[in-house]
Amino acid sequence: MRIYIEGLQDERFQRPLEHIAHLFFEESEVVFDEEETADLAIVLRYERDEASVSASGAIKDTDIKADYTKSLEPQLMEKEAFKQVKNTVSYVYLSMLQEHTGIVQTWGILTGVRPTKLLHKKLQSGMSKEAAHAELKRDYLIHEEKIELMQNIIDHQLKAVPDLYELDREVSIYIGIPFCPTKCAYCTFPAYAIRGQAGRVGSFLWGLHFEMQKIGEWLKQHDVKITTVYFGGGTPTSITAEEMDLLYEEMYRSFPDVKNIREVTVEAGRPDTITEEKLAVLKKWNIDRISINPQSYENETLKAIGRHHTVEETVEKYRLSRKHGMSNINMDLIIGLPGEGVKEFRNSLRETEKLMPESLTVHTLSFKRASEMTKNKHKYKVADREEIVKMMDDAVSWTKQHGYQPYYLYRQKNILGNLENIGYSLPGQESIYNIMIMEEKQTIIGIGCGAASKFVDPNTGKITHFANPKDPKTYNDRFEHYTEEKLRYLSELFGEDAKSGFQGA
Image (cartoon, rainbow, N blue to C red; front, side):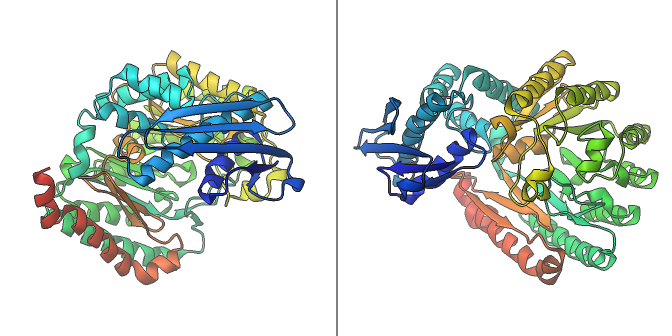
């Protein structure tokens, strides 16, 4: 679907309008010229003064029109003011596309990853729930059911982490291990098939240990505490038991006050990487929170998406993990995998019921730009929008029935049915790291290959992104440089000069 926009020339509108178009049309493009080649022509205009912004629009050759006026707070910075302009234009644009297609978007104009962050911000500023909810409904066209979901999640987050708004003087650590047994068809994470990578694995682990030592040394010197540590990837349990043992020993030696870190999680997402020896290592270092991710309980699906384990192996490794003291296990399911519909997803929920993990993350399949699945879409038949919504409804009902509560949520571009990914847990079993990474209330230091850092300024909340390279060879060649860069960012935020600044804040 090629959509021509008349009346706007500012290129800053193109991406937000394109993101909204993607909610309605599988393949879409927004252009500001060449009306002749367009499938749909829309007029959009806006006027802005110091007190308000007004937008209006019409779809050509139809009777569909819309307009909206939003008041502006006085003395807004230009960046924030233009954001309000974009939201107002998006409101009009979405309203017209909903009428044109008959498709209702319950998330309104929101296309970002972290909708709960928006509500957190309003509530933290002192706004009442009623006023915050009314604003979300009025200004963003979000439906009541999604607002209730957001509020429910925030309530559970604040119960799990009562000092969530006060943790900006602490940090969490993400440690990326970029190896997997094989690469899944839907995956865009840094994940290299570990077979034949022995030399690179050894070099990578050398760099990883170096980063842990230097970062830990800096945190100790500046008395900065660690809230959570998360070993992700890839699949961290792809490396050997001996390599895992040395890695956790390094964590205890390098990081400050490890015994009082609130949570340490290790992704063991691929059941085919789990062994008795590796579980013994986890237990030795007092790690009992892991992820074992079936994704589906259909062997044909697992084969189609490139996972080299079976349903039977998932169950076997889950029970083995329980036997070896893993007392907080997360499992992932994905809605909308190729060839799966309501019947197959209900079977996955029935199988999950036999195991009852402490937490369950329900993902909706997203066609990520760089994934094998996206590059070869014709090979992968997925369910339509209505069936996807039914599967999500099943997940919501099942989790409620079995005592699971939603505690974090995120959305992705090109997600099927314009839905969301929701983490559910039994009471008291929430992943603190998942809350921290989603709500961006503190600095997350990314260590290892493909690990992304987010430096959150304790005074302003401004976020600075920094990423290590995804390729092991590039990482191995320059890990010292990337470590120095992160230490520089940390010094700017938490060094002596910065400390004196936020002590008086």
